Image (cartoon, rainbow, N blue to C red):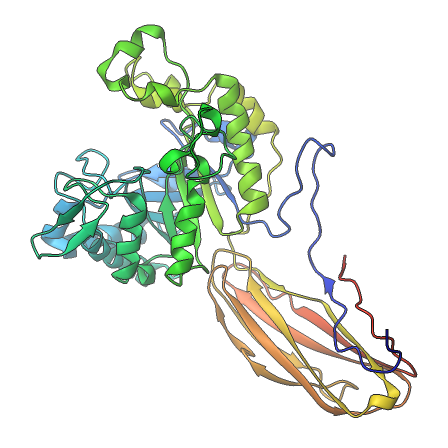
Length: 481
């Protein structure tokens, strides 16, 4: 290695701290930046059971009144959005506004529709062929109305049903062609592509999806067929199909937004006589044991926490439909329930790594340090600092340099502004013509930030330029603390 010269790199002291819970080898390492909401779809609001399990998000359905919920419970509120609403979009928007005005103080996020890529009058788009451009009209109407009332609310597009790859092309009444459409319902991936191509990405904070596990284990690779049911994810019938949804978002320029899994789960064995019920035909291949349901649900949270920083809400379907007396014994949705089954205890024991609902500013480093060879001066040092909103609500920030410090860089780029949920910006620093005698020279960059419900907690980045008599050309390791 050459002896003389300048090593133009910074020693970064990271802010991230590895969070370990439970015995090593039992629980995997967590994400350094918490990003998950732990939630349930419920039949009855068994709030104390949920809180005792460490789950503090509940999904409510249209016409629910959330004002009786305790303050520690966060709410995802689902509106129905169906083809019939296109007959009077203004009335649809007014209904959304009424809910936001009445309950906005206790609703944290809104889901606009449910499985709108399938033509089901009870829980999908309705009796008409699905059309992403039509759905976009309702999504944008709801988004505008909600943001007028509560700009900090999270708007999630309708959780799409995993359909597998649908053959065929459908031509609508306007002559538009829709790929992966059989004239009734549409491939979930093709629907999302059409929604984003139509501009729907501007009317959502997160993309809703329903990554049910079917027969596959939580970590089965998407779109890979296998003779072993637990590894078979042919056509995307597995939990990790969510990765394909996020890939589409990235391709369409929406990689900075999150996916919310507003439903997911695994179905378990019903009584034998239910298997002859016509509603169970074609579904039996999806059945898993109670123990497998438990391990898959826990594994899904751990996998998403460790590998999917782009995932936000993760809502199990369901908590307690299996004990609700108004559902018939053979009703399929009963057998996704976890109450009183091994999954309940396993999920309660599972360590949680919960995201902050409020805006939270994080800086990519707390120290920028440079070694300078005294004989190589003057130099110009340039560097950048990443600023990231790790929360789900917007924040505003302003960066300033310590005046009259020994190191006083010029700043450029995003020195002030607004960061939406999960958005990142870069702050550029430049120290031109630096020349000093042997010694250590310091300065600071301070980033003040403000978010609704969160006080200012400035992020301080220390600057350090160390002038020495000899610098070896070596690569310094990344240090974290």
